Length: 105
Image (cartoon, rainbow, N blue to C red; front, side):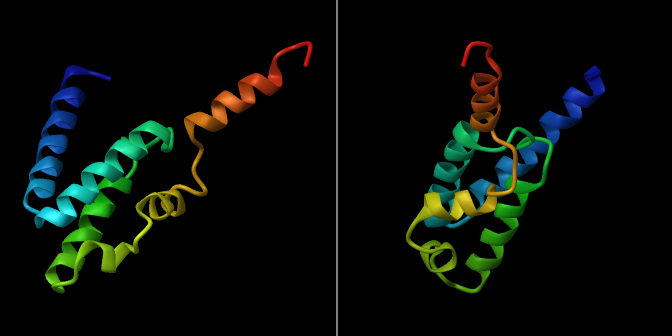
């Protein structure tokens, strides 16, 4: 990864964060909690993929209809996140595989 890629990545992240800040307060709060959750348990390719920007797109559409965020995603935010990443490889998967591969088990 060259310096140009790093600079471009920062520009994209700042633009993404500006979109998040423009969301209504309830959407913004839920997005930030989802982001924390996904950074903790989420997929290995989280930053390379379109998951976070896709969530913002979805939230922008929901906000445009005048619906509250929990009307759009449901009451269980963690379950919504888990559904989004159910087919993705996670850090927990990698850890589990490393435990299973250790000799003597």
